[in-house]
Length: 197
Figure 1 (tube, rainbow, N blue to C red):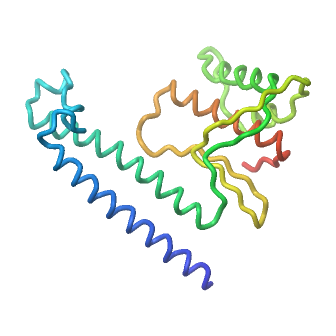
Figure 2 (cartoon, rainbow, N blue to C red; figure 1 turned 180 degrees about the vertical axis):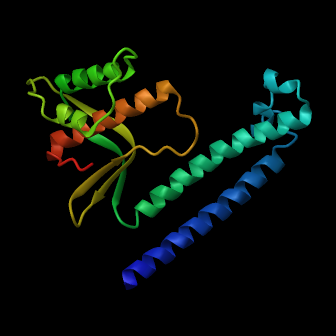
Figure 3 (cartoon, rainbow, N blue to C red; figure 1 turned 90 degrees about the horizontal axis):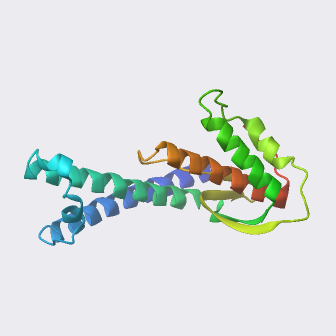
């Protein structure tokens, strides 16, 4: 119970500090850069589609885009800081990746985008990547991850691709799927992971 209370206090402190620091830095940066032609808002303000709506709208839409991006970055950092309270946190996965695994990932991604017979992502797809008969040819890869968490008490491994901002177009969604598949394959080659849905 005491650990739960201390964890809650630590999280509340991290959130409070993170939000206050973000708000102050965001305000200071935009106020000091107001007359700077190379400042954040002035670089984002030149949008031909918004220009017809007037200067004020241009300014506020640029500020909204800047806010959205900055807030997403702050929330990702905050999530990492909170994760550090409970896990060993890394933002990359390094290990062996077999050509057969890379081929199977490409095959799955193609199946997902097939409009005639679209395949849905499922937990079994991870098993297909895991249980491939591998060749002797193998490449050592380092793959950047949003979060790779290790619970040292239970030896549980977690791969997390965090989606905070609204930038989830189809191309990015595909690359995110590829990333999580490759990271899982690398980790499984190292630790023979048990997948939990």
